[in-house]
Image 1 (spheres, rainbow, N blue to C red):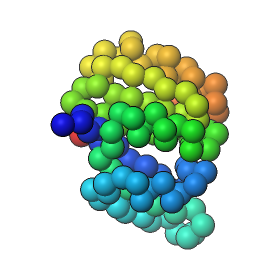
Image 2 (cartoon, helix red, strand yellow):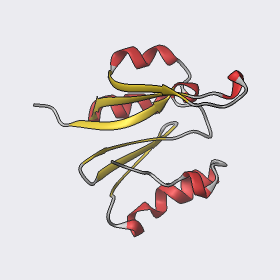
Image 3 (cartoon, rainbow, N blue to C red):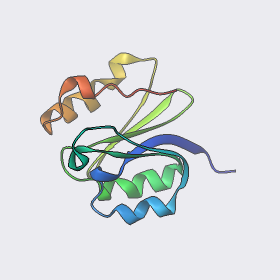
Image 4 (cartoon, rainbow, N blue to C red):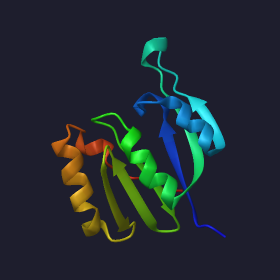
Length: 114
């Protein structure tokens, strides 16, 4: 059995959004911004480690995604990947610093899991 990770893909973060069809979608929702052009389409997916690697080439600059299995977290940016233990907050530092360098506000680099 392949280890499956869970995470959320924001459709607007993708270069080619048809890739969502490659994954098992567990849930989907649309943000409720008043202006339809500002709405995000969010897909909670079940995804393999290999698919996460492949997905990092399909993320637009200044976006990231994160996936988790138990306390193991994988954060991907376009062409870049970080792995850490959720409970070890110091291990988050390289991913946070990289995200800030890419222009992502620090408060958005919270890597929530459920």
